[in-house]
Image 1: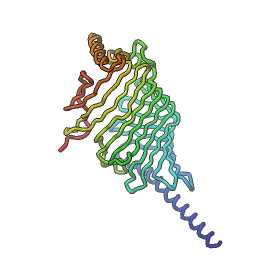
Image 2: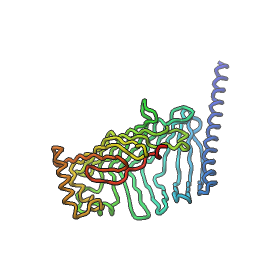
Image 3: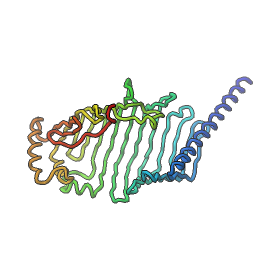
Image 4: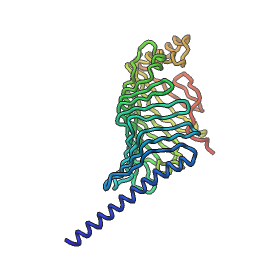
Length: 334
């Protein structure tokens, strides 16, 4: 009995020591990050820093955060930010952000209000801490810019998970419900009220292959997109809906190349948007509508339009319509 008691006390002492060493490392890491940012010329301030959760958690709370980079013009202000991790699996971190924060951009400041804004990052327990799963989610959300625009959503969830059996391969998922574009922008794009003020559903499922893995060295290795495959993409906006599937990858010059098949249901609903946005000149609207109607007849349903988005030789075309240069994915080979 005495030996058992000694063993219990020894284990308890070691566990307490582990927590205090770990909490000190967390505190020092945050303080060092603020100091390094200030040394680079950025404004990096906070009014409070605490580590709690003894003995089973590391609960980090940073209060009164103010960051500003004079070079990029990007900044962030928040009353607090919290990170949580269990002591027996510190490679799994949960972040909680405040209901209101301000993001500063070069020409404007954006006030973000959100309910339940949080993120989770889980790495594999290995030396390089390779990414296993990252998830970010929010409830009702709104962004208000000093430039006058607003953007909101009822709910949004995004995740990136390491794919099974693939080297540097990841599964990307995005779900947005009730996206509310800026009312002034919406009034310009949809002057006839043919579309509702909110986009009902945005869904994206994709397979992503990177040049190098996402791990603790990503800041130095800088992963780039080596291939992107859309497996299930859907947008529903009132009676208008669009789906897409296909694959793109960089060609020898690093430009995006491949094909994505786009299906638009009730495609005539988008014509006023194309005119209002300047994508189609008003005098060409009838010609464009006739051409698209002819293409829709080939699907067997005049309200369904199927078009290939082709990226080839540095250019993009959507069906017969040229869109312009293809985006750069990788630096040119060699």
